[in-house]
Image (tube, rainbow, N blue to C red; front, side):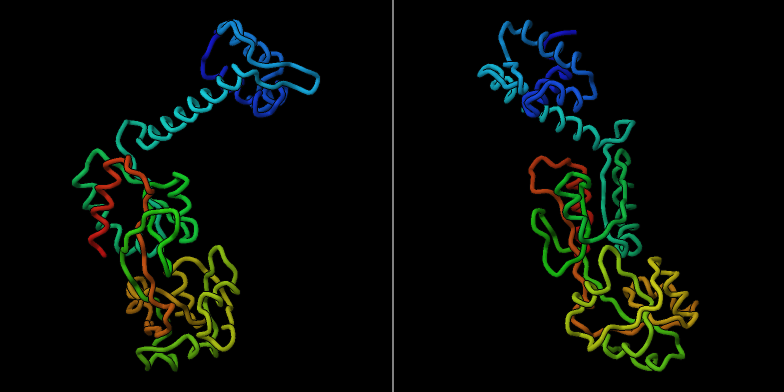
Length: 296
């Protein structure tokens, strides 16, 4: 096949950008002779010289530069078309990629997604559990259609809507000296071991997040990511744990634990729903956002 097909355009664009047919061939996983032949076929098809060949490599002629610019636009449009189609499942159903931190997945999202899917039987949802600091970037980079994250302020680069608020507190055994209190500050617990979890950041960054609310770092004896497992460790007397109230409440009675409200300012968390700043979002995405937003 000769002429202006997509593989030939990719080779030509690579040759202009790499200033070398051999490097273009390597970039496209071809041998140099095959890449050179495809460019020569394009030149014969157009009856124009597109590349000047010289000892240092290649450079585009004015006609070649014009073709390069148009080819880049064509290939970009092709990428956008492929990305749009990837937004649908194999059977052609609309597919929404929803990235969220763990707490909403366990508390709010099951009922909300269930209500949405019952009303939209031709849509599927891929629910991804991720970290707050990466979720807005995933939406910007089109690795997620909707994100749910928490932060002190809305993240830049995305359109964010307030979602829900929650509060983290201290989980302690019922017989613990602090269990007689309903509310504490984290400073009240620094004399006791802590069962912690610090995803994607160091313990030092956790201390920076809690700011000046503790006079010295807590002693972290154990780290475990799973909420139930963390409560089990508290039950076994291995330390105290910081957990959201709605999640901790699932385990308190069965495990003989108490949840104490943390009065520190950072203990209240604001969650946000985020989407891209574009007008041509898929209708299914906007409809799911409409279902999620009333939770605010």
